Figure 1 (spheres, rainbow, N blue to C red):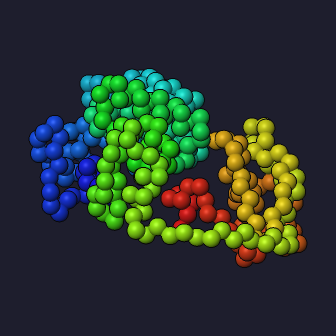
Figure 2 (cartoon, helix red, strand yellow):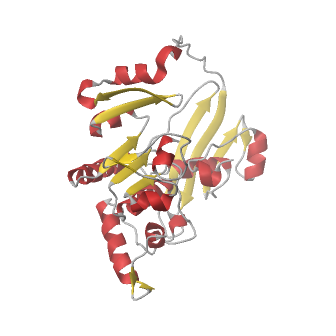
Figure 3 (cartoon, helix red, strand yellow):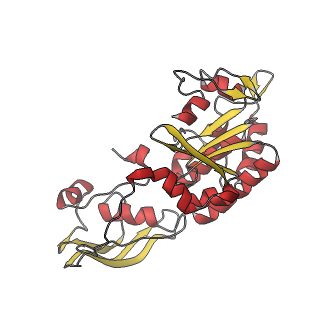
Length: 301
């Protein structure tokens, strides 16, 4: 909410916002951007039916003699994407990109503006480890250019790596602040949690019978190559299995294949001994298998 007020999305009931020591009125996103304030929301605000370039420059187009200078925008978009090490054609449809790449496009859009204050709300939530490193390099470049960055994250190691000053809110109130060099992760956690901290005894679950069996699951790209290549594993009752991989490794495709949202050319999926291979998405839901999708806004409830 605080960041939405700074970005002109919401209007404060009371209080003042000072920029360069002067009180400013930020009653709209347009007013905020005129003051040089941009925000990258955790929930992406992009248009999947438009191309990457149009998403970067929407409502911020470059005109020449009353006509959009598409050649200039293409070159600038290409430069911004290369800066983020994103190998994507600016004319590519945004909807064909994965959620991580879309998040980088959102960041490119913010970088395209004459920004003095850049607010980043959980910008790494859908990024791979290598993409996070690229983003941190960009943040370092912006800091050297004098851009002020407000970075919101629950990943405390990120704050310790790139932050200079930490401010902690709890229940809508300012709690504490400290220079990063004087802070520690335990101190941050204590300030965030306050008196609500509880200790829980870890009780390992007893693993029971096999519930889910995946054998040789394979899915092909339309242009050749594999989305999934002979993936096999079993999952027992009371067990948690972690799936890890970089962006494009097939994590999302695996889950879509399991629940029937993506066709697989071969392999078997059994739930409690029942073969789900020929069952539809709706039938698999009724069988007791569910999915919390990566793109909560686009595919979730």
